[in-house]
Image (cartoon, rainbow, N blue to C red; front, side, top):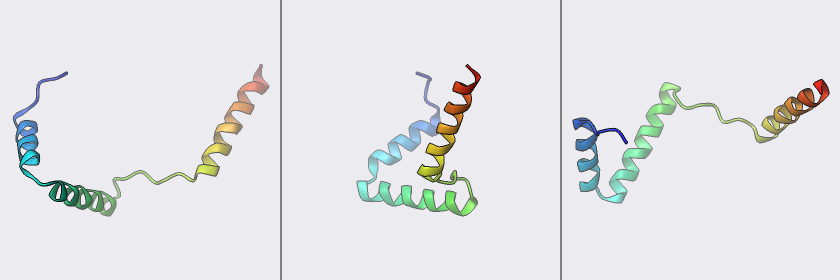
Length: 64
């Protein structure tokens, strides 16, 4: 494990002083900001993902 930086230590101390509700609110605010900035990955449709994986498997099997 790497050594924690001063910023990491201060963040941990600040979070320990916070109530669970305050930490949850901070997390919600962070996620909303990330959504606004377009930093979150697009959620992939499960059916499309399964089809893509099945296609990949069939392709590999057909090469054999």
